[in-house]
Structure formats: structure tokens, C-alpha cells
Length: 102
Image 1 (cartoon, rainbow, N blue to C red):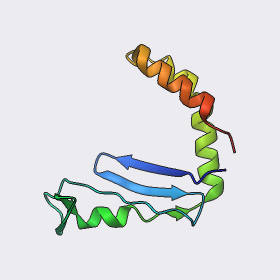
Image 2: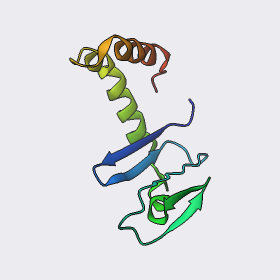
Image 3: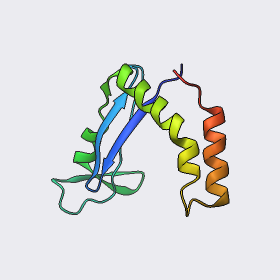
Image 4: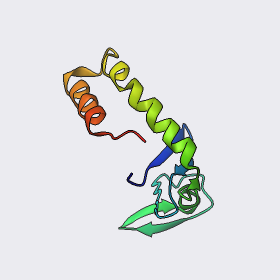
């Protein structure tokens, strides 16, 4: 099973990163530095320092597996959502076929 990551995003940005492994490194780079405590420059772009802390994963293999399995089971449902379009449906179908279950 490959390392898996679940990134939970809310309107204010990334709020949680879950992983099924300790052998994973995650970087969250948020170029929206307005209203942050400070920023650094990465690859020529400003990055909010607090966004770097949001990428620290919580290791929870059972929760990650459950989320992946639930999303996998709902990919066909997602492909049927109006507005997804032909390309989106094809991509979701391909994702479902290529995505191994836990």
C-alpha cells in the first residue's frame, strides 16, 4: 500500500493533514500572507510561516484508510453530479479504476 495523505481544507485553508505512515513528508505552502504572523520566500514566492505548521501530518492509518475507502465508494456518485462535465467524469472514473482499496 502506498503512503496516503488526507488533506482537510476549510475556507481559512488547510486545517489538518492525516497520513497512514510516518514515512511521508508533507509541505503546505500558502502564498496568501495577508494577516499572517510572517512569511518567508520559497521558490521566489512569499509563503506564510503558519502554513508550514499545517502540513505536519497526524498519523492515523485506520482513519486514512476509512476516508479513502469511503471516497472510492462515492466516486461514481461524484461523477454523476451535474456540472462535472465529460472530462471530469472520465477523470473520476479513471481514478476509481486506478485506486487500490486498503
